[in-house]
Length: 566
Image (cartoon, rainbow, N blue to C red; front, side):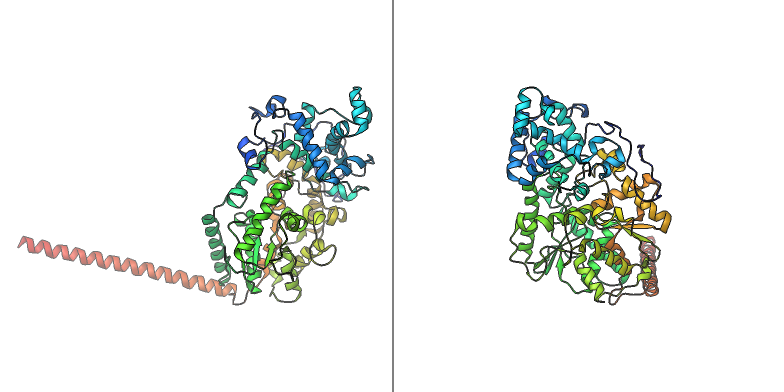
């Protein structure tokens, strides 16, 4: 592992103490800047000079021409289109309720990572150019008198650095008495940066792959089909049951939209096999789409509703082309948030789908009622090697709902875990449900060039995790978000945990479910032994045939030689 300054955790009560301030502790150049070709794919300006070195990030000679005017024009555009943004910029009274609620502030100790201070990086510029007081005192050379600030090179650098130390998790919003949504301010700041030549490489490159291929990884259709075939073979080897993972199957009832991480990495792929087993056992007719094989929507991270819409329209087109009746989303936090909050408005109406089902629907909304109704045969002892806890992913916990009742996004995943596992423990109350701490890697921060802040941002969750591992012998933490699972497997070793303690919820379902016609372990062992014996026998037969053929050919050669000699 690389050498990073890792915050200490004790696990004493599961809650991180408010740290002493260390100004500019996380002052940096920010993540890697996007190249013009990536910006072009997003329809962002490309008339900027790519910085030669990270130390040049934000220098005015690297930005677009007339960058200041264009930044203010974009701010005015966003303020006009999204009334909530102006409200959030206007109403903060600096009460301090949010100051210690951000995982990045708690882990980094940098006061600019307090939500109110991070908001003020944009709010000060807004006040200077868009309020009467700011304009008046700005002309007098005293903008700071009313909490305003000039837009200059240093401000741009702070924007790029600190607005990429916000995962848009919205925890601060839960505790704000005015409901100010810091995520919207971070999204707006990033979109302004996108329009002056400071887009983030990680997000824009991923969006480019999705628009070109259909998923964030750039997996072409042939590779995707081959991956699904391999998973079918794995399930057959495990159960003796022929479970299909169909691709581009027209006329299917369900289109499954899942994060591309589900196709290639653990624990994600184990969750995908869990969905397939549930669908198979319930007799559901479903398919994946090679055109829209990605549930994740990074348009939200970069603050671009236009790009969020492009991804959403791919899903709509896939559903129409395949003639499905339902759209179901897999385990991905921000994919579900975008789907639940925006899919109908960005890409609707979905009047061609079956209106008897939620549009869209989460895969847990299929699995949980099926378990409750006894439609799935479960052997909970298959997960007895684990003591589970559950991480509420931010975008699901604070940005969506699940099921017909309020709070379903908290209850449904836990109901599923309890239905397939004997041992479950929740983390401390102030760290779960809508008060959950972020994994530290969301909001477009899941990139190696931001590993330092990712590790520090994970501290509050690691503190709660250590508490339940110490007090309740928890061995595994389940999550229903691809980014959470990817983030945790990368950062928890820095805190002394094993990366394989992170599991998918449907991985647990996959372990416990017993399919109709499934072979027992003894039967599978006997089947494998018989197949091995058959393979060896076939190999021996081929060997014997080859030897007989060689002997025959040698005898024929000897006969021919004898005849020649005579």
